[in-house]
Image 1 (cartoon, rainbow, N blue to C red):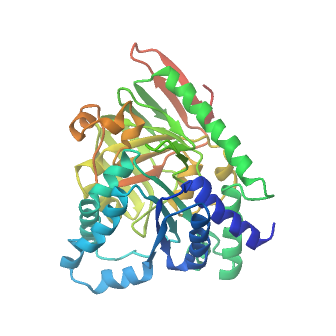
Image 2: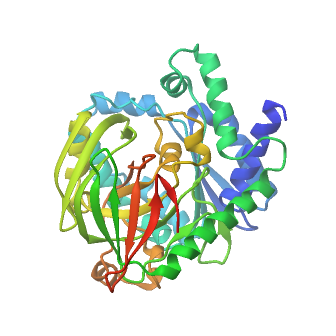
Length: 410
């Protein structure tokens, strides 16, 4: 396949598999300006599939950085009503959402922390209606990535910008299974594999997981009562399947945010709000982070944890074998969309209500009673290693090995 053939296939995959556009649906397409040409391809594919309309919102990280440096903090403490209503309106209309990201991993390094935090909290409040619909499975959404020079040269520092971008494109195409033209068949096979793994764990009904490795991780996390392991495609409330992340290699579920104890060490850098946090650790007691440290980016880690009470607690547990397609590329992407799919990970912040039985019908109070976490954040961080051991613990105290030497044994 030529590059243009692969790019067109990527656009089709995003519209068909990613959000599975169906006739009469609005499509809310957020697109990095670096990816405008690709965004138009995706837009066209959506219309071909019967979209009622495609609303394109371009986003510019470099312009956002300039605004952070110069605008008064008061401008970040509220979101204009017209912006909030745009997002919330289309959620009420049952739209599907595509986010084409093209991020510089360090674009906001050194930016005023108080403005970044204020912006996160204001957006979470303003778009609450949208996020409530999305979190309960009421709309289809997906995230895909598009390379840029700043990102590519961070991943491949020894290459010229043009060569780095080409190499990053090759890696991205491989992660989303675009190679010889049999892309959609490969995704069907992959979906079946992830669902088989999830089904095995769902049969066990573990109450907690215990993690250990040679870095010093010794950590136990409780699982919510009635938790559901999920992986691969999701099913929207309207009965249509879609893939929230492309690529995806994980199976995941809801932890009980009140039950986490011990120390866990990160294994890959975390790019949070355009700033890298590297070689960090978190210590938990009774579900909350009570201690932390980082070799670099500790102030960004502190900002993350201080966002709200839920940012100190867990909202997701995800399992991925160390011997997996993205991990085996041997590439550090400096982008959570890819790096989280190369490694077992946890997420600080908001839970996914649909990872617990009847979660979409539960009130916030009912979800909290099961240990579901609420937060303005949902931030994945990677903890997988080649020697990671994970033991599943049942209600009667019996134990079953889930992971050994970084991979599934169950």
